[in-house]
Length: 527
Image 1 (spheres, rainbow, N blue to C red):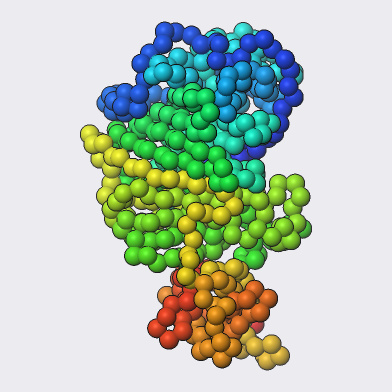
Image 2: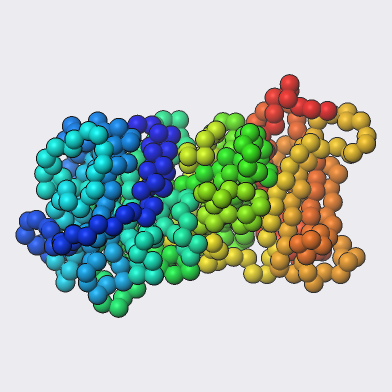
C-alpha cells in the first residue's frame, strides 16, 4: 500500500470507528481474559528488548492474519464493532477505559496489547465476544492469540466518546475539550518527501499500565519496529482542556537512516483563504490545519501558511535546539468552513515542546498535492542534522499537546490572523504584466497601542522576482494591521520564498510570516 492509500484508510477508518457504539450487557470484560504467564515489565526492559530486536532481521507479521480477515470488504470490516460493556477497566475504580480495534481489511499486522499492573504484564487474549459483528461474510473461528489492530482510550468525563486512538502503523490521534478529531501524530517518519518510497514503522505491541484509583494520568508503552529501526516509547497522557502527552523515545537503528522525522505530525490542507487552487467545493475552506508555527532556538516566532501545491514541496527551516513547533488550526470561525458534519472549525492543533537539547537540524514541512479531503497531505517533523547510525541508542523526549490553542504562543508579538491572495495590480488601471497580490492581517501584541499615525513599515523580502505596491495600514475590524504587496515573478516556475514582518523603527511588532509561492505557467498568468 502506498502513502496515499495508507493515510486515506487510516483517516477514514479511525473517524468512523470513533463514533459512539451501541451497548450490550455482557458478564465479563477484557481485563479478565488474558493468556500466558505474567511477566515483569518496565520501560528499561522495553528499551533492552528493542535494542536486542534491532540486532535481528526485520520480519513482517502481515502474513499471519487468517484469510477470512484479509479479504473482508469495507462494509464487512465496518460491521465489526467493539462492545463498550467489554471495555478494559470498566468495572474498576478507574477514570479510564480502553476499547479495542479488530484486525482485518487494511489492518493486517497483529498488534499485541498487554495490561500492566504492579509491574507485571499479561497479554490480552482475543475474544470474539468482545465484538458485535453484523457483516455478511463469516469470520470463522479465530485464535485467542490473534491480537488486535489498535485501541482507543475513554475518560470518565464522557465514556461514550474517546480521547485517544492508536490505529495503523505508528499513527495516533487525540482531542482536546472540543472532542473533535483532526490531525494525527506518528511515532516516527522515515524518508518522508524523498524521491523513493516512504517507510512506515509500526507499533507492533503496546503495554497499557493500569492507572491507580483516582489517577487522571494513563501511561502507554509501545514497541516500534521497521526494516530500518526499532524503538521503545512511553506515553504519559493527561486529559484536560488540552490532551497533554509526555513522550519518551529510544531508537535503535538497524541501518543508517538519512531522513528521520522525529515527533512527526500529519494533517490535511485542501483549500483555504490563501490557496484556492482546489476550491471546487461549496464550502469556503477545507483543512485540518492552516499553518505551521515554529518557535526556533533563537527565539523567533515563525508562521508559515499551508498550501495545496501543484507538486510535492519540501521546506526546510534550519535550527538548533528548537523551542517548539506545531501544525495549527488558527482559524476557528465556523463561517469560514460552513461544515456542520465534520466541523473543521473545531479541529485540534498539535504542538511539540522538545525536552532538553535536540542539537542541530531542521523543522521540515512536506506538502503533497491532493484533491481529496480524506487524504492527509501535510507532514511536519524534526530532522536531525546527522544520520542515525546502527549500533547506537538515540534518546528523545518531548511534550505533545492537542487542543484548540497551543500551550505556547507569541505574547509580545502580533500574530497572523489571515493570509489572502489574488491577482495583483491597481483596480481601474490596465495591467501591463502579471503580478500576484498578498494581503496579510496581523492582530495582538502591541498593535492596539499604536497611535493612528504610527509609521509602521512592512519589511518584505523575496528570493526572486520584484515586490511592489507595498503598504501597512490599521485594520479596525480586528484591532490590528493589514500588510499588502504585489509580487511580480520572473519567467521561472520554481517556487519563490517570501518573508514579511511589521516593524516600528527598530522594534519588531509581529511574528515572521513566511510563504512559498509557485508561479503559474505562462498560459495561466492573467493580465
